[in-house]
Length: 168
Image (tube, rainbow, N blue to C red; front, side):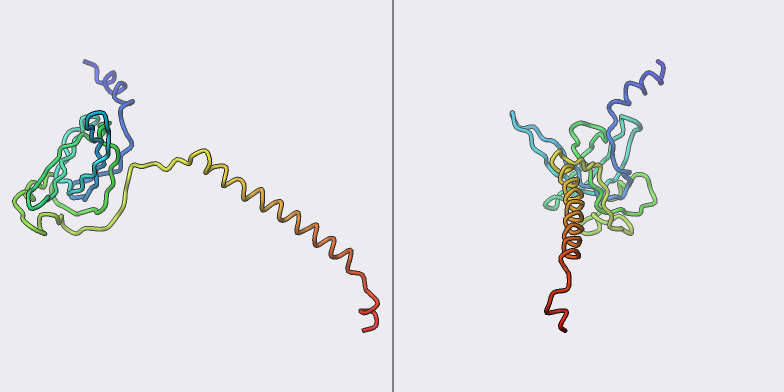
């Protein structure tokens, strides 16, 4: 089958995600359906592997929960994945850090030298009210400037020497 056709179909399903690497501490916002309700659950852990390419790209995130290691394999461009936040960037020398599975305690969470960063795929879009609020102060400032100019002109006109100031 022709790969160009597949790529054109997949283009519509890609989501804007931050550049995620192995060793990063990531916070995944996953959509969970319970009956007819839908909520967002946060899963925070270390990325220990990235598999696949294109639309089939998966990340494996591991965390320690109550002394038990928990791993989630999440498709990167899935509609189930609401948002990704990268909290720390760890430096590792391998593409898969499965050796973290054998670690216990504080060593299980650390991936090399970590740097505190914050990356997210969330795009801040102003709502209708926010855009108008920014325009209003500019108009008010222009009106204030006109009023100040008028007041200054009036003061200059009315400041004629009076009898008291002439005597001094």
